[in-house]
Image (cartoon, rainbow, N blue to C red):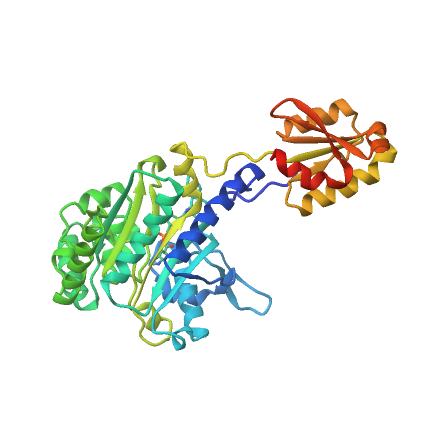
Amino acid sequence: MKQLKRIKGTQDILPEDSVKWNALETIIRKVLNHYNFSELRTPIFEQTELFARGIGQLTDIVSKEMYTFQDRSKKMLTLKPEMTAPIMRAYQENKLYAASQLTKIFYIAPLFRQERPQAGRLRQFHQFGAETLGSADPGADVEIIDTALSVYRESGIKNLKLKINSVGDPLCRVPYKKLLQDYIRPNLGDYCEDCQRRFDENPMRILDCKNETCTSLNKEAPKLAENLCPDCQTHYDALKKQLHILEIPFEEDPYLVRGLDYYTRTVFEITSDALGAQNAICGGGRYDLLAEELGGQPTPAVGFASGIERMIMVAEAQGIELAPKQGLDVFLIGMDAEARPLILQQLKALRQAGYRADKDYLGRSMKAQMREANRQKTRFVVIIGEDEIQRKEVSVKLMEKGEQIRLPYDALVTELEKYK
Ligand code: HAM
């Protein structure tokens, strides 16, 4: 019969890799806790409308990439392609604003986008991210950037580049949109179909197009960061000033608009040369109007999300060992039937005392069991044979030293401590 395969663009996280994931998630939780963010978990699927309204109909995510389906009661549902809209929905629905004017949330979650799979671009991928809801202060933007960078620092990931920009607010965007359209209009016929479609409603999206012709046509396009209204300019200046205070190096990229429509003012991306074409390890920004777009009270907010697969790729390219290989503490070998119940009891006691311990389940010979203990890089091999049973003892091979000792059967767990 034909063997079934996993879906294209998805990955099995094998045991040798899942230890790295766990190590990274431990670092993420530790740093996010230090920065006073609390974890929020949302469902794997949501009403399609949440993303259509939140991310924007004309974005690639909503127009081409969502896993959307009708359930048996004909509701349109979507596997979440990102976390910001679900977090805002959960914030409003659970009235998190009632407890405090400022809410700081983080998450680690699987997400789904039907993109063309390639290195670092998957159809099911994972993000960790943070969102600060309730503050319009540029200090919150800086803290968000600093939080992401702290996780990378703590993981040992180096040589990252931070790019920032401001995409303004509706006040400066209306006149800028006209300026941009005036620039594009004479060559509109040469732009790709997607860009032509975006021209009337959302010309800023054209700046995000990856098509080579469009990128070269955009080279001299007017820059929004040079056409900001006074309030957006003040916000952008304060952001840059505070980044300087924290000695966080950055580059201004006037054409950085990001692939989601909810952004206002600050946008940023963190990239790594170790990643190749899909070089963004992190993206984020401010989204002061998303709350109202979703039918809630005005709530200024800012956040970021970082791809976990891409973090692991960068860590590996940089030779960072996220999780040193863990061997077995104890392997127990019983020489005959009489020893078996004793092995069972010792195994349980050792495990309860915190040892990573195991025994044979394949009826292998003593020699084969020793080979297995070696393969598993075991520190102590405990052997119980006829002689040991008579003397109420166990033999312990100290594998690193190559020595063999005897310990009293009743005090194995405590006596072994001395050789740790
Ligand atoms: P995003 O730029 O779409 O932003 O995704 C953030 C990060 O997720 C990317 O920089 C990348 O590392 C990773 N990522 C995205 N798509 C894929 C994929 N197909 N395969 C592997 N990794 C991927 C957002 O999702 C926003 N919600 C970020 C945000 C939070 N803005 C404000 N708050």
